[in-house]
Image 1 (cartoon, rainbow, N blue to C red):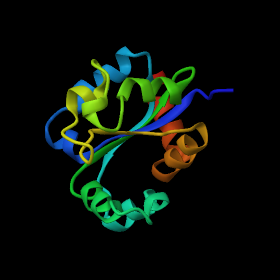
Image 2: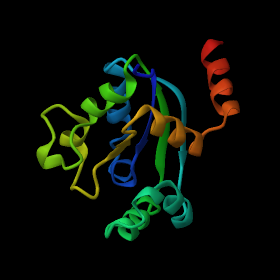
Image 3: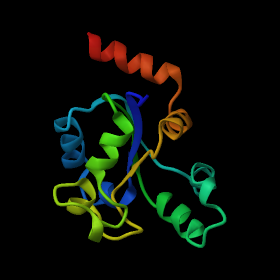
Length: 147
């Protein structure tokens, strides 16, 4: 059964280019609700921990360097079938292969600077969301939204 939450990051390239607002607008217009969000910057060490699944790949060092090069926006999103629907919204990792109207087609610069991260499974959405947020973060945001 598909879950109703996923994790995303607006990456340093899209943040620096001023695309965060447009990306968030696309996310909300696609029916996702932001249940947690924050602007932060990863150190190279934290980027390495987040992407440790790729540490044996040749691009790992470059990925960690890029992801620690500037601010990001981390978000937990909610919607039925969240992971699959969000993967469709962001498009292929390579923007040249991404479908028209997807986030990566509109905002990604290249395969390496592809504007957003999106969890690839319900399990990874939980792991990745927990990397950036505690239960307290989500409860606090829900209380603010309810007032």
